[in-house]
View 1 (cartoon, rainbow, N blue to C red):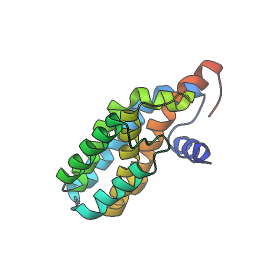
View 2: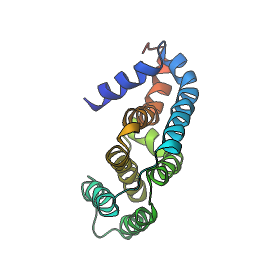
View 3: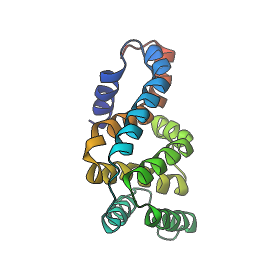
Length: 169
């Protein structure tokens, strides 16, 4: 279900073979980013800090591989919650989401391959996913753009695999 939603979103912005979509993806993601930046330059609402913290905490609490005894996970959770407390506007949240997306490149590959994430990757991935909820709540005018951009990040590993097999999107 989630994969179909991602594929549908990607298909709205790029069509063709998986290889063609993969090649277009960086430009599409940059274009979406530019549109998000422009929209936030015009309207950059503040975020509700309590909602932001509760949203991230909720995602972190629902990590399947959550291990209360694992100090690596607990450390990563602590770092993420402290970082969320420093974010004041939708633009701050968006910038942090971009930063996490860059850090999580290998983790997206692991998810696509069905490989287990490290405890730190689990915490970062849960935080990254939660940021869409915070953004769409505080800045609904960028909802479609941010969700589309997230779909491209999540689709990237699958596009690489499909491109090798010659699958059309």
